[in-house]
Length: 167
Image 1 (tube, rainbow, N blue to C red):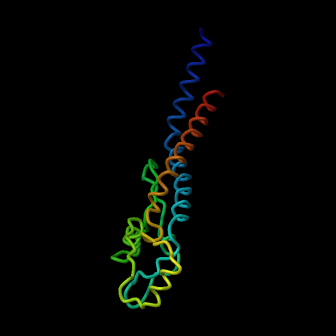
Image 2: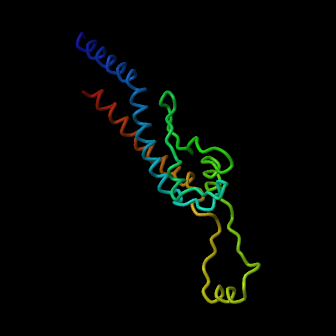
Image 3: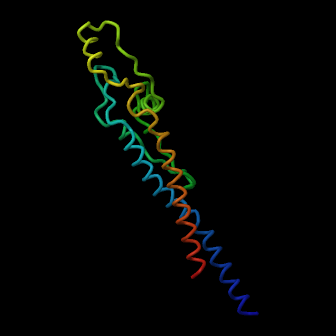
């Protein structure tokens, strides 16, 4: 009887230790998950945002949109998020251009004001029309990856806890 009582006490102590360590482990899990998601979002984001005028005849340099994506971990480590950087701000800032590309817009066909020769060439060598801007939905495309990664991380964490309890 004393042996069962001792085993239950040890089990209770181990479980209390797991509960005390859970916030740190959760934060570490979200840090790892955030890094992986950041890589995925940066990979899916288009390379160039040329054409977005900053004013004064200046343009964003190549690859800027990818560099603007940052990882954010909640203050208590309860979640990981990928979002646009804080700076630059404004109409052509990081958040705005990320939003423009993520939500996209239709790319119209330029049929007016085109020479007859160009129209003939388009008929001879048709190119499938590009319906939306490059990179549209790059955040949305990462959602499936996020769900899969979170499930795998939760399973690994549960296995770790089970291993600690079995020792």
